[in-house]
Length: 599
Image (cartoon, rainbow, N blue to C red; front, side, top):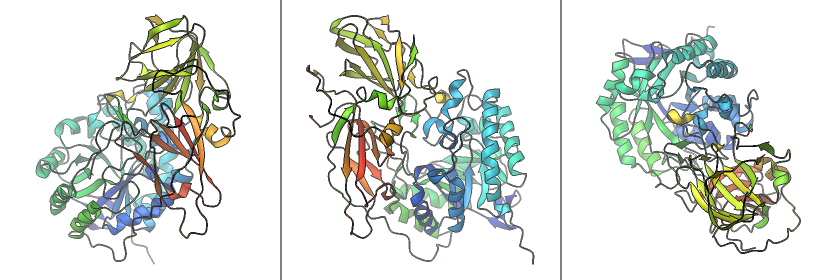
């Protein structure tokens, strides 16, 4: 017996997609596997299916799989093929956004920071070094994807090339042509390749390319007719597609949490579907920027750990009023599946965790930087040190007595992104990109001036994507350039996992500290989850009363950044899969500024 041929393509006569010979319209939702623990993939996908969606859309972040050049990781939470298989088993088709650039409010828009080792590289262009790296990566990724294409028995119906390229300054058609050729070479001629751009002729001018199907993105509340007319300027016939119909919006530290009312979205969604158009809801579930994965926008504004997005499923995968409002609209056009919607996961309040100070970053430096410092006359960047995320300590000696407060400055705004300055172990203040370029310090000649620099996330959108981290330019003390640096790359995550615990008591430092700052320090504690109670551990949230800014790990898993004094995010989501009830859970906190512990 012959299996019927599986096909998916575009019919320009009926202005529609055609699946297995029949006209087909998809209603899809975005979920980023890199923002949801593998443990919860199935739960989130099932909730999406039960909302009446027939497809999902996901990004592939190149830097998530190739953090170090030439070292590829597709295991555990990075097991993209397993994610595709789960989507397939759940009855969802997949629209794959393969990059190489993805934006996504993700560090450097998914591009690996090691690309910046060639400082003059022009990202997202036909720069030969950039293209060579892209070709190598796509030579790894795309052959893995090929068996998962719809015509090969898998769930992938379409593959997006690049992302909103029309919003980028380079406007390099040769680049898009090279990508098109590369994708065809690895995936064949059958698969639908497409682009996504803002719904205006201006954006489509540099974003669309003949041979790639041009789609648009636009928000609720606008003029749907006008938006699709923009798509028609590039694609006079073929299916109407909104690839990013926004269900909410992104957040930045220090700004209000974005909220978009469910009714606004439901109304525009209905208008899109009534037209027979295809739509992807961005996001359907936002998830979490664990560890250091958040991106940033310009002027420099980093995004928080939560990528909740005010989406129909919350960051923790909870069902919301918006979920049911949109499900109702979808149900007018798609048959809703029979059966029960998986419920919102139970949360459990475990109570307080007592933390004890382990030591300051300077005190435990030998464990954080086992290879010791790199010596350099002038400061080096993170990329020059081959450290791409987290923290680096820059140390020099105070060249003169500063008995009176003396100005330490970054005259060229070269602190990327935030620097915690201490003299002889006493915190003096904070320098911050675009915000605080000068502080006053005091201290004796010859003592250590320590500058702990935090990479707060690379710019993910626009021309400043080549976001170098660390001290980008010289610092001055009273207008004299500081030289002769010892630069310590810090492996915070390795130390938290292995060697930071169990320190002998350190001698207390004498001398008052006039400012409300303490030197950056580690604190640890344990959380015991009672055994014998069914269904524990459960999801929870951690809050930080009296803490200021830092990073938190639970059982060595880097949960992300906390910064309640700046907000809007006050609590961090803790998925149950990182907790255990068999032994006490280790909680380690790196507080960068001021902790409530007086000891």
